[in-house]
Amino acid sequence: MSDTAARVSSLTSWHQDWSGLRVAVLGLGVTGFSVADTLAELGCTVTVIAAHGDPDRERLLSVIGVSFVADPSDEAQLLQLQEINPDLVIVSPGYRLEHPLPEWASSQGITVWGDIQLSWRLRDKVGTPADWIVITGTNGKTTTTGLTAHMLRTAGLRVAPVGNIGTPVLDALRDPGGFDVLVVELSSFQLSRLGHIEPYSSVCLNIAPDHLDWHGSLEQYIAHKAIVYENTLHACVYNRADPVTERMVENADVVEGARAISFGLDTPQPSGIGIVDGVLCDRAFLAERRSQALEITTIGRLRELGLDAPHTVQNILAAAALARSYGVTPEQIAAALENFTLGAHRLERIALSRGVLWINDSKATNPHAASAALRSFSSVVWILGGVLKGVDVNSLVAEHSGRLRGAIIIGLERGDLLAAFKRHAPDVPLFEVSPRETEDIMVAAVTRASEIAQPGDTVLLAPAAASQDQFESYEDRGIRFTRAVQEYLGGEADGDSASR
Picture: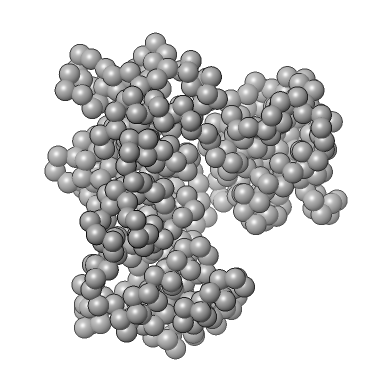
């Protein structure tokens, strides 16, 4: 190991000397800018390299003294990186492990970290470091992260939901008020470069094929997700209905004394959280867990709160397990649920008009999430399509063909979807919205859906695919759908647009 690499490796605190390090930051999204801003504050010489710029962030980079290089060509970016010859490279989520820039850096003996590894090393800026509760899974990450943070906050703790949920961990670490707990949502991209962290508690909610184009195989995707349990201190929470997550816990190298805690919609065994006769209960965090259970809330009450969809209940159970591991009482969890609402673009109720319910689940970016949304309704006009990320949609279409009034395909990747419907749902009316027909895809999709839907139906945007072929993000896709529905209906809506 070179002297420079040894120096970088030894930096494990905000209060050590980071000054003078030459650092290249790859990517200028929210994470990349947060990394650059943090390192500039530490006195590093920072250059951001990205395929494209962002005018607002570029202006801020110049203010804080960070250089910026933008070029869509990997070859040109690599030349810039070689010219910088950095001491450290920080890679934003989304850069593949075999991407030529971090691959070159590693081959030269240059230290390469993701943003989470950097964050872990800098977590002591404002005093005693916050504990980290870490959450991943194919689906439900953001909802469970929000739920867990809300439960902890209701218990009087200073808490921030961070990571893949949208707020970089580094931003929370630099908050002068400090936090007791950070609830950290991690994507498989972030986990692939996680490095060493020590979560207080951790969970992988579920596993289904996703991002196979990025990871290369389902096995590699699972391997990256499993990293979430490594070095866990107190509770490894897993899904009883998903044996893959249980095997992850069994194989994880955890701190001695860490417990395996299961969650599920069935009756829990000791060291589990689940449901008995419509009551959500805890048999994990009480001394008499072999003979007793603690009541948290009921399915009936969750139904009144609009939180009774099966996958939402699973997220509640997982969040409750994490919160209980940190000492939050069942009463505090029940109180938190009374004023929790699902976030935008996740089973978001847009309108009820003439007996037709309009739902925005744009965050259903893979078949597993779309399947959960479809199971929530009995008769559906389904709007789907986008970037499929290398996953198979045949089983999704086959499973839900019986509940479909019709399907409307958007997105540029049509072949696999069309073939799946032809093979497994040939009798379902199928329509395509082509980008050549209109500049506003969602206006056309909503108009077509309104022609198909009948009273009692749900028009459901659950794309089962990523959005970047036609939209900026799943948020942009959901916003455009919502706007198109509201403009189409005008003042005809019978109900409000509150989230379920």
